[in-house]
Length: 146
Image 1 (tube, one colour):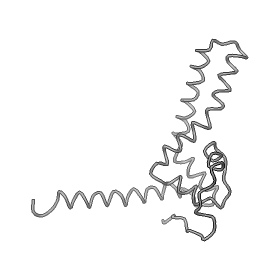
Image 2: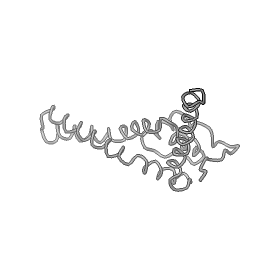
Image 3: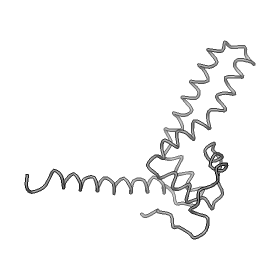
Image 4: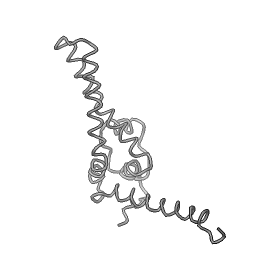
């Protein structure tokens, strides 16, 4: 199944402005005409690292809020509140990363792509990369001369 997005001649391939990219990183949704950029972000080789950054930035405000509430609202010692907040941050990011593939595929459906489009595309790219790597290996090490 080929899920490569078709380029249109409009604004589909453009990168959103910095403010919209920051909004997207914080968990916001971009206008649909940036769908190709969103697809590219979800399928490039560093997609998982960006997913972790996005998850971290989404969980961080809640973690800070809980830490502040523990200190000011309940009178907890600051080190204990920071430890609780840090643990919440780690668990939140871990949970988000545990479902990174599914979450990314679901986000792509919101932009009009078929179900599992991003993971399928990444798998196709990996398969092509693996074939190229195997060809280079075979050419170097499996020649008839050896």
